[in-house]
Length: 140
Image (tube, rainbow, N blue to C red):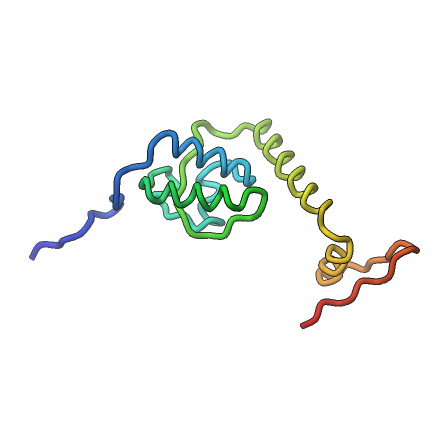
């Protein structure tokens, strides 16, 4: 009996180019991940993809997804790559600062009413400024 199919761990197409891998890593870092391994769980990468081994089609699809959602969380589903060198404390701190600055920018553009409703949903007790009213609770 002969099995027709791929061997375990094999890719289902030609490997991604080094340009695609570099672009993916750059986009993941912009999304706040330290590399492909760090993004593996949140983005739903397979073990193979978490090691930076993915096909051209997988890489192209992931690049498209990440480019569409620049500055937003990326939903799970695609491939990945391993960072070239281990992250240092300094580079982790820099990545954290970049991520915090991006989130601060997003929060600065969010209406105060939505922020207040979300904080109250999480159990916070808020006192609005004198010139504003209490936010309406979310409809359920």
